[in-house]
Amino acid sequence: MDRFQHYIDGAFEDGSASFESLDPATGSAWALMPLATAADVGRAVEAAHQAFLHGPWPGLTATARGKLLMRLADLVQAAAPRLAQLETRDTGKIIRETGAQIAYVADYYRYYAGLADKIEGAHLPIDKPDMEVWLRREPVGVVAAIVPWNSQLFLSAVKLGPALAAGCTVVLKASEDGPAPLLEFARLVHKAGFPPGVVNILTGGPEAGQALTTHPKVAHIAFTGGPGTARHIVRGSAENLAKVSLELGGKSPFIVFDDADLDSAANAQVAGIFAATGQSCVAGSRLLVQRSVKDALLARLTAKAAAVRIGAPSEMTTEVGPLCTLRQRGRIERLVAESEAAGARLVTGGRAPKGAGFYFPPTILDCSGAPGAPCVTEELFGPVLSVVAFDTEDEALRLANATAYGLASGVFTRSLTRAHRMIRGIRAGIVWVNTYRAVSPIAPFGGHGLSGHGREGGLAAALDYTTVKTVWLRTSDDPIPDPFVMR
Ligand code: NAD
Image: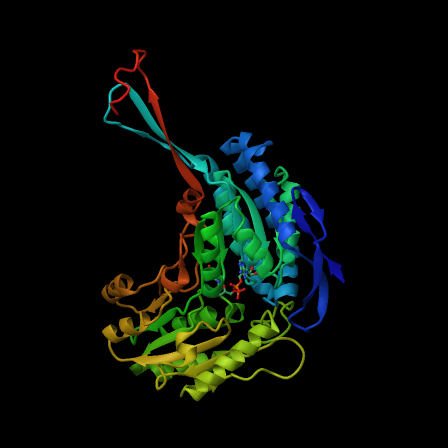
């Protein structure tokens, strides 16, 4: 069996405990992973704290930090095939997706490498004579970064990139499901030459997560995961009063009007819900379609769903692989059954195949008669599309916003004026018009409501890891006059 290690204070080490990681394609154990205890987490945070205050890191110029990030980007690019293989093996995400996504992850590090020495302070035209006042942008301190199983390299790049560019140090906790790619990535961090303690990477479950997020020396918690865990974290942050940014789930509407290019919409919808076997926070899991084109669109989608090549995620021809865990498949099976019981009509898929691996087929449920079914209201995090018909634009908007989530949305229409009305009306952090699931390091990403808050990507994300220091400098050599009058 393969073995992986933690990376703490610049050294590779076994965890205090270990666990076997399962290959989702076969259900068999394939690697031995370290499991962090609270004590391991404590050592990692202490190392990050020391590295933040002492040693070479705080003395590096922003340009030097940028160069380290650039070196890391090049190493990620060179190692992308190996990292992709590991992510595919450990999470079941198909190799076509992991290969392309990880190659692009290198560009996220490049973007933040370039940004490191562009995080500027400001000079203020202060309302007092003989006084210079300016603002310094300083790193907040130790960042606790926590990611879920899907896209671990991507979701950590949007935290590590801006945090390191800003001058913070990081303890990154990989998900206990599929941690292999991040533990391997630690070798690249080491090779890039980051000083010990600047980046620490470990894995573990809720115990490790809780120890990390409540640690008194953590200044910022950057979390991606589910809303339930987020609530724990926010409660726990009452201990250290750390700043918290949350990237949570979604129940994103994918809206198709009768003037849309239905072939494009169908392709985008297939990518939006069946890519990553639906384990995507921005999955367009609620299709809202204008009634007059519902049958035509559904016919296209059903044909595409039936033709999808399901198989071993390591094969380049595979389009839909297994889910990451058996637990996740069980949850999806239960929610599909409950949706049918609530009146949703199964159009295609819906039943897990017999045999090895955690597979679940592309599934479509017509929920026009069951607007309250779980597949309409809950994030399933699987390849399950709910379909609801609408008649008017107002109804489409009302249905789109009838969710506690607010992460992403898609609108397919040829009408420019309608597109603008929808962009204004939809309550979500992202609106894709006549496209879906596009991302870039340059574009902020995030949501509101149950989807969390904070934005990853773009310049604002780097500023989020800084704090403002206001400096007052008196420029007069005259003695300070009356000490009891505030000036
Ligand atoms: P999860 O919340 O169960 O786990 C996420 C991480 O939190 C894991 O590393 C886990 O070990 C850790 N964790 C668990 N308990 C903890 C605790 N008490 N304290 C601290 N950390 C703890 O999420 P999941 O089920 O693994 O992932 C799926 C969720 O992530 C979905 O809701 C999905 O939409 C969301 N997600 C969001 C985005 C985004 O950018 N908005 C991206 C991907 C996934």
